[in-house]
Image (cartoon, rainbow, N blue to C red; front, side, top):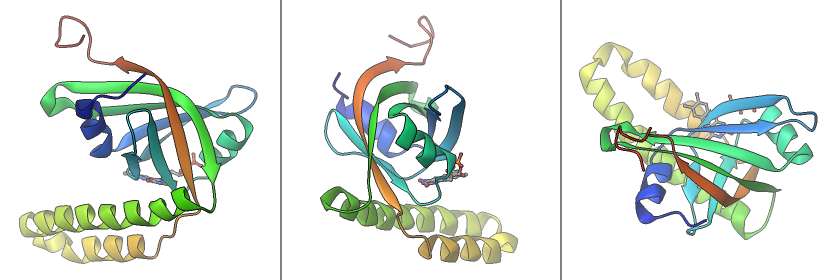
Amino acid sequence: MEMTDEMRKVIDNSIAHVATSSRDGKPNVVPVGLIRTISDRELLIVDVLFRKTRRNLEENPQIAIAVEALEEGRAYQLKGKAKVSTHGELYEKAFEIMREQDKVREERASAWKQKRPGLAGGFDKLIEAHHRLRPKAVVLVEVEEIYSTIPRGMGGE
Ligand SMILES: Cc1cc2nc3c(=O)[nH]c(=O)nc-3n(C[C@H](O)[C@H](O)[C@H](O)COP(=O)(O)O)c2cc1C
């Protein structure tokens, strides 16, 4: 199933919740900021800190992802199959995604610093810590199913 431009915008700007499961079906869900669509059927997730998520994907490629832009009345669940790469063209793309996300984070932090100057040191530490992160792998997701999670009658289709 194809992602529309509107769906892609929500995914590209969300903190997604990414669910995986072990071979024997134990679920795991984590928040993920480094997520970008690369076509109307594919998206990339950057693995910088995954542990169980990575282990699960190596045992079982099934993945489910929840994203929301509630201020726009949009929220989706995607399901698909994931493939982990630790080198090659897609892996190089992980560095690009991280750089883009660094900029977004810095913009958000500078807005917060103006609101809460007392927390400025904390934000600087957080940004520094993110600069030290390196992609361990990139996860290519082939999207197979898409659902709106906005209930019917509340704006959902
Ligand atoms: C807001 C937020 C965004 C995150 N984004 C990412 C990410 O893009 N990539 C990543 O590898 N870990 C990210 N993490 C860390 C994971 O959510 C999680 O802590 C990590 O995968 C370890 O959990 P696991 O052992 O269940 O995989 C993020 C955490 C938070 C709180």
